Amino acid sequence: MRRLDCLSFRVPDAQACAAFYQDVLGMSSLPRIKNKDDGAITVGCDPKGMKLSFHDEDSSCAVPRQSSPKDAYWKIGIVVKNLDHAVAFFHDQNGVAVSKPAQFLDIGYLCHLTDPAGLTIELLQQGFEGDEQEIDQNQHHPIGGQATLAHITFRATTNFGHIQNWCQETMNMRLLSIQPVPSFGFTLYFYTWTENDDETSSMPKPKDLTAVENRPWLWARPYGLLEIQHRENITTSSSKSDNPLRQTGPKEAGPTYLTIVEDDEEEEGKSVVTIDCNKDLGL
Image (cartoon, rainbow, N blue to C red):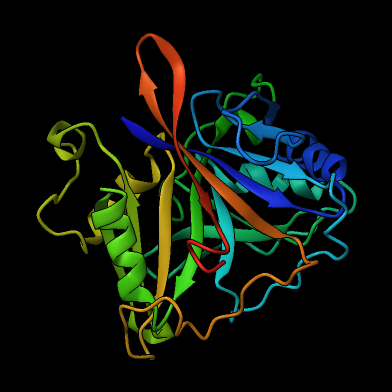
């Protein structure tokens, strides 16, 4: 089965980023399928899950990211079982700023922070506010011991038709959830690969992808998902060239490549394709 393997980032200081994800977020240093950034440092929560890699060897990245709602690339998402437990750990770490956890409408209980390169991280609880799980106090890290690196999020406006076609037709991904947020003028779409219909048989309402009851189920998935925020106040188009959202600047921190692999019983994984985040996705 195909899966999201690794999202690579160009950053000013790869060592500083890797240390942040390991020390603050509890990720581990991991090997990965090789792509165009062979000198990158790779981290993740699970060797079989999605990973992040950071590279600075070509010295092309001079400035941290200055994120804004007009960016095509938005964030990565980490799902945890107990968000308040995770945030309490942040408060014990000097210099780690994090927003106050809040239930965002009927989407989820979440908060945000940034890494040393200015890249946005969302922490999302599996259950809604008040539905946290008990955490083993003896786990190896207050966050890493309960976390799944789960989401890669980017925005679409007039290029939504192109992105939707890329997910469904080009990559054969499955749409698992549609989450309208009309008060903020957007809808969230979540794509991934599943082996068969058995995967979604445990979904509370599998025939209604907009059902709120499905969301805690979705947040508990152990694999990576592509999340697309479709800004609906702008007319859709099948062309990617009309996208008014801001792409990553030439010397700015941001995503470079997305590696997709296909699991094989006889191998650790085999590379399927490496996606250029700028050229192929407009990030």
